[in-house]
Amino acid sequence: MSAFISELFSLTGQVVLVTGASAGIGRHMAKTLARAGASVVGVARRREALDGLVSEITATGGQAAALAYDLSRQETIELLAADAARGFGPPTILVNAAGVNLRQPPEAVTLQSWNATLHLNLSVPFFLAQALVPGMVAKGGGAIINIASLQSFRAFTNGIAYGASKGGIAQLTRAMAEAWSRRGVRANAILPGFFPTELTQPVFDDPALAQKNAQATAIGRNGALNDLDGATIFLAAPGSAYVTGQIIAVDGGYLAK
Image (cartoon, rainbow, N blue to C red; front, side, top):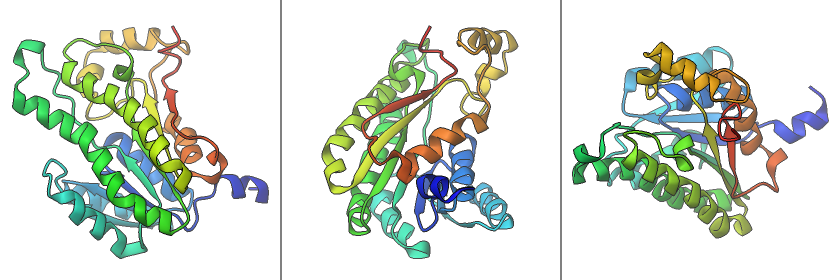
């Protein structure tokens, strides 16, 4: 790697906190950021899965730690923010990948399920960022990467609560950028198309539906997790120093059609 490319995209010396790191997009992004040189703190409920992530990263020479937290509990945010700084120092990059999609028809949505979806998908990204931004500023700046969705801009069947939360993520990202960019903390979002994860397993369990989604893209296929690597590193690295408040679709051109 040339010195120029390394300067733009190396994450050596950065500390990344990734929520939802036990599986799917969060786990993959954690490994990608570790490969780019960052020290990674993975957060999720499942300790065993997190320990497996740490083992994968350290086996290839990276640095990683695991924090088992249930982000559905409001009181965990401040505890997590303090705990996250103990291993490698205050995080300079936050990836908000934890999320839930209950796929309920409108008549089945309850106040409890609505609040649970909005809390994890929308409230946690904001309040966790709010808690971590002072540490980022003290270290000279940082980056927030939220996870948006096709449902940030398109309505899907049985997606009222999830769609509302992800529409909120698009605007939250812009609002975060407006609030914190002048202090050196950029905020952007990655908008994945259809990728095989635990969250999207019901879609991929239906071959006809998976093929329909693939044909709805401009490229003609569904995503593979490594399709997210470039956007992940770009938004975390110095190469995107003048990029903030953006929602970058990695969807094979689904939204373009």
